[in-house]
Length: 121
Length: 121
Image (cartoon, rainbow over all chains, first blue to last red; front, top):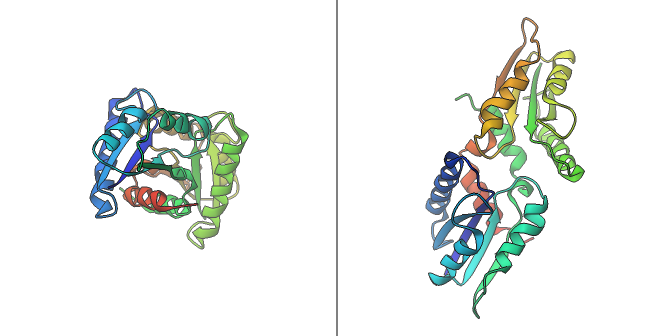
């Protein structure tokens, strides 16, 4: 069973965390058959934590978890903190966890910025 | 003359600011005839500041400036700080400055996350 765990920084502002949860819902809807579960977790300031979110997917029977950092730049959070949090969770035999390139590395980012610039709402 | 000013938070890590400048270059290359100038500016910790970046575009003859916040969530920076920095710059007659929706509001974001998850590099 394949799954995605989207990692956001987490905010003191509840609305920002809710925004993340809504985006996770959108990803789940668009994922189709590619991922059977899509969840989010937060590095700090919001729940679930990365270890809790990852453990929940594994407990639910996910055997492949792709962690996607929802971060724009490759600072300490992406380079060190997220891998360290992921490493805290024991992976049973047959379970693989992979960390995908962070969002800011997307080759589609320049196009996304141009599209945002053109929006008039 | 139409232009884009992409606003990033700015980082103590020079590599993150350089990443932003490289992305700005990519946007400029993809902009074609839509924008005659594409620049970036930083809310804090890096140069140019938002007022300096905006004033440079106006001084260069840009009459339409679209400001695009390269931010993932609608916190204080997006809601208050960026508009306040933009407001510091005097706009001569005939110059319009518009702030576009911030990056995290892009309707294409869910698809971008799915594409990142699928990358294996």
